[in-house]
Image (cartoon, rainbow, N blue to C red; front, side, top):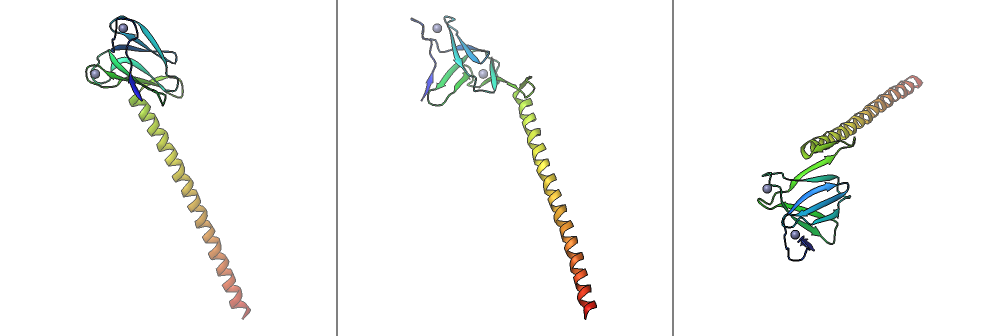
Length: 147
Ligand SMILES: [Zn+2]
Ligand SMILES: [Zn+2]
């Protein structure tokens, strides 16, 4: 069940929030009354900042998935997601594009490693075949000489 987060303060039913990531929490600030709410988002490998990745608007509607862990934010103007910042393996904050590039590089490296291993195995096979052919030639010669 996905629910829209609505401000709980009496007399306010604001559903537009400024978002901010503080430590492992997503802090929502109601645009109407400035009440703050915290959501644990330590399961995300990125932080969200209060700027739409498409139109740079700074307020968001926020949704919670009650079954699976999940907090989603959508721009109040265009429905776009907030700008996300990822933490790379060195603990450096990077943009989504850079993270993607990094992931692709990692994948390419692993594919390269596999191809390299395959080449080694093929090399082994070829060498094995050489030995086999030499042995056969030797056996043939032996048989011929014995006759
Ligand atoms: Zn409010
Ligand atoms: Zn937007």
